Length: 328
Ligand SMILES: *[C@@H]1O[C@H](CO)[C@@H](O)[C@H](O)[C@H]1NC(C)=O
Ligand SMILES: *[C@@H]1O[C@H](CO)[C@@H](O)[C@H](O)[C@H]1NC(C)=O
Image (cartoon, rainbow, N blue to C red; front, side):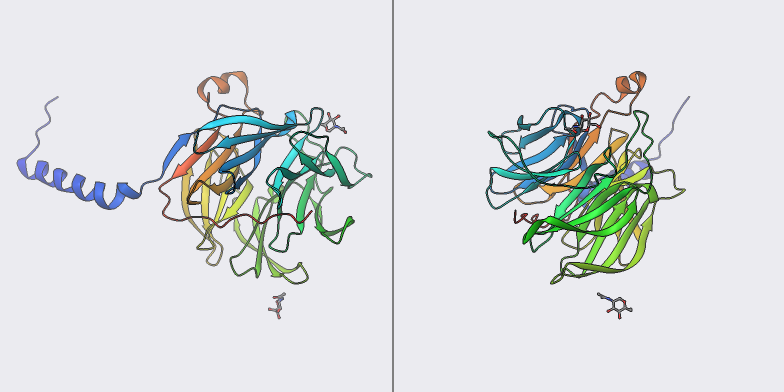
């Protein structure tokens, strides 16, 4: 086959490539694998005091620490026999609040975890699945029902709990009867709360009263139902108040404007089970994405060899806000 290119076309192509590189591609997001795989990466948080991304290997009871200046990853905490998620920061950089099955615990790298409270004795197979601290240092932690090895979750037996620093033994139930308690975020002005129950496939918004920590006036800002994009999982927010959501089974991260309910961007990740997202790096402008290989069959593992790794997305043209410390 002969391809004849006219001189005009060649010049146009050259000009386009110049413009394209300058205008478009200098701002095109780039996705890089930054750690080795773990079985089920989840629950990430970045600590600017030490320049580290913490995330969990959920079913191995591990907190991993990725040092973003050195590029190294190590096991920071290991509590065998437990599902561990999430990992939250406190005022002391060496002390973390974690979920351990149905318990909330305070842990230091070198010592035994101190259990603060346990929820849902009536559902012994439930476990915590995600959580964050709000600006006042309260803890918001959601549970989920038992998940079979092939990924079926007992529905409607989870709850979103809120712990206040005054009394860690008396959490309030903020949302009852949920499927899989997942992503949480607050708007910059602290008047909106965003929340995901993965089983509904919706991203919810509530009015938020920062003084009392009460949520009200639920609405749905975006749904992935029927879109063949998997289920919304972990979530974070950027300085422009847009939401960033990992799509479990959807191999991607989406950016959603909650004010207009529009999908702004979808960035593919080379791992089908993307689990969560968090802003980090020295300028808080790198979006770290945790992933999992737990639900892949052997054949899929071959062509998704990096599943379970953390990926870094740079060049997004926006950045995050620092995470709150849990006052516990
Ligand atoms: C935590 O949950 C896992 C998974 O269900 C279970 O195997 C483990 O025994 C539980 N650990 C404790 C201490 O209850
Ligand atoms: C909930 O919505 C009602 C009606 O729009 C409004 O009057 C009320 O202030 C809202 N609640 C909060 C906490 O913003």
